[in-house]
Length: 140
View (cartoon, rainbow, N blue to C red):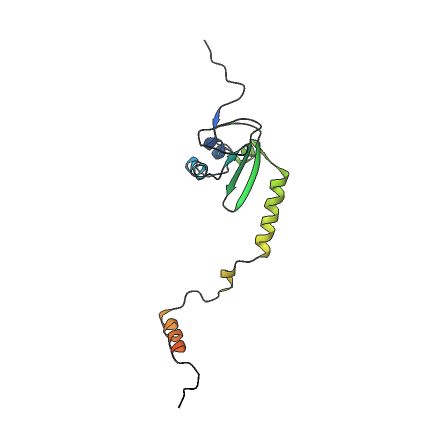
């Protein structure tokens, strides 16, 4: 007797996210799922949930939120071009990502404006002396 491969492969969500190259390791994908940052068809998912073709997956990669539709299921991690065939990002998600990238580019981080960094011990002493001895006139 020979076993035939099923028409649709059953793949765990954490394995699929890893194979589709959303996360570098399977452990990272399982952690993100455990934190509730991954939704399948609008519901919070578990790592053991099976991914099917046509499912809509919403996930966060750092600051970037993405919504993708599953085109294929595989539990083996391949090259990036092969991984990109496993999903299709929605046009709304692409538009949101480009808008967020533009906002990050235009709105600089306030901490980048600091030139000298943390004050040294000498600088802190000078700041303390400046606060202690003010230029106000003392009553006679």
